[in-house]
Length: 303
Length: 303
Image (tube, rainbow over all chains, first blue to last red):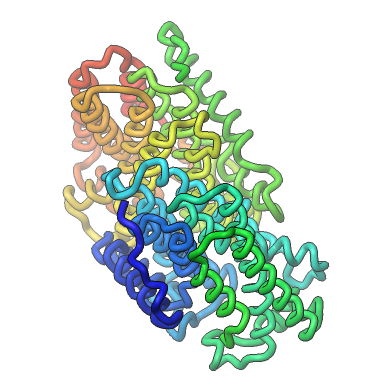
């Protein structure tokens, strides 16, 4: 097993740039341009060259915290981003959110048609699991393959992301209490963010107590991400966000801001930030610097 | 490892009945009714109580041919059926084939709405990979977990089923030659049928030459299945088929019948049948009785 090169001396910005470059390069190599009848082009359009790549960064940062296997972490990072990207492709379709712009470009169904967009999303999900199960077991230990697949499938499926989307679908125009809202977000965005941290952590060795602490960090970061999203939706304009601002309010979607008010939501984000840092401290791992920096980024981001 | 109970003395019909009952029972236990916001109900509606279950039968028959692990084969059988069922849910949607009836019932999007149908399909795909990666490794050896996931993901994705669907989408109204038509079907239906055989075979131990022969059987059976489908589409009426007959012709889809004529297609089905039996003989495995019977069924079925 090769381990990650020491990059602790890089600034966070340079570290991010380096990791994002590696993920982009790997995705570009693994998402096939030559898949039949334009399918590969639609898949590449849906996943390459865009987005914050928060999930891959969490995978890589967690893997570094446990001195994890570089190649495994890179596959896990790309797999989780493929799941996230496929969910956006399907979410944007007319029968869901009917969005025509994403990351400043026409959405996949606008560019390639609805049928191809649905197929591309489906194939992106399958590809995520292909990446985690290379046929050459020297690339990735089969036990780790199985572990990563299990974490990702559960983060993506009915008890994770897809389940949260179903709650979201059913909750438009309804008034949710804080518990119900939290439950929706724990599944819709939280489950995959937490899975990202768990997958990164699975790429190395750590005591069960450290793994549990990292997983708690992933959970709290997932919640914080959504609270900040809701804050930005009312405080930033569309240009800064790169997506339509004020959309939640317009669609009568329940948000942390509608539930707690803007100040309440800001205090809540702050509390979650502190809980994330406490979880990292509780892990007693020496190399959690990047996870701490990601927590800062998630809470203090302006878009 | 428990192995399969000897069922060689059962008639094929009784054997099928027994296997289908076990698969139905397992799917009913594994596809969660209580997934959030009605998602579980849509998933169950899409996969329970219907269909020929050809893929699970191939998994079980191949597993028996190699004296494979019962529990592993049952998980594989349910996983591959979930992939097949999700593809039908998505295929039936208005942006694809726009079908309103399936197995004599309203399609999932008619019953639950398009958004829920898309989510249910997405969650069914994820669930397939969850079933293959039980957290308790005593349930399924992690090496076998990884192997089964790899086979299923490749059968389902851009180089398998989804890739074939993309070719199908692009080929409506076009004239394909036999090579192009074969390529489309090898991917669209063939890849998952072959994966079913390969997954069943992976549940036991067999010499590489036997595994290769079984895989060849799976390949040929996949082609035969499609040729017979095309024949039935023009020779049977809607009532017998349980789905709209003559649909391919109406949609100007290329078929083996339009390419070879009815007699030519029938001769081709017969040749493929013989090749399937030759592959079983070449495997030199003693327990291929059920695979032989499935080959007979695929070629001689009336619907």
